[in-house]
Image 1 (cartoon, rainbow over the protein chains, first blue to last red):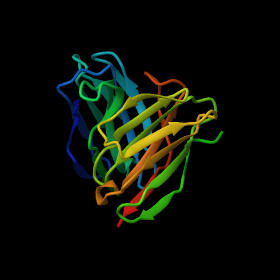
Image 2: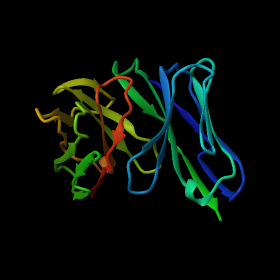
Image 3: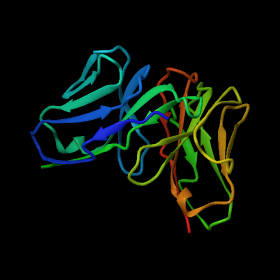
Image 4: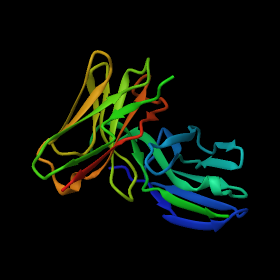
Length: 115
Length: 113
């Protein structure tokens, strides 16, 4: 079974600070996706990274896919209260246990940005 | 354009009962996936359907079943509910089943007492 470990699980920072969230696995994924989820809503896709070593930027958010396509990081510069939410990474690939092609999610990082 | 819609939004059941959750995909999307998100955890894959056929199944017991209709909407059924089935059930749609962006609905919050 594929597993994705996210760290930290909780993060509370002051507005303007920088932060990095990590997503690690022993499995190789064909792609890795980052989502943001707010209470009472479904996850919303932020970015998909496909190529090992790929870096994508979305305004103040920088996403990186590891060279071996097993890990990823999300870096937020100058965090704002509007960045508050649950950040989820998800790897796409075939689960050897279930035998199906699926998205495997990490447990998420709950970010609170204090004004 | 309407996004993925799910009904009901909230549901309370007792142990042993069964439940049916419904999902309407984005227009033009033929693939629907179901996920279970327990409080404090990330979503866990349950099923994927494409063109009315099951294309993938996660590690869930046979009490969980699903189907997809000719209009690509989908139902998730759970029989003999357990307390541990309490969760947010998410539906996601995509044009095709693999390597496509999945768009999630708001979910159905199920509480089993």
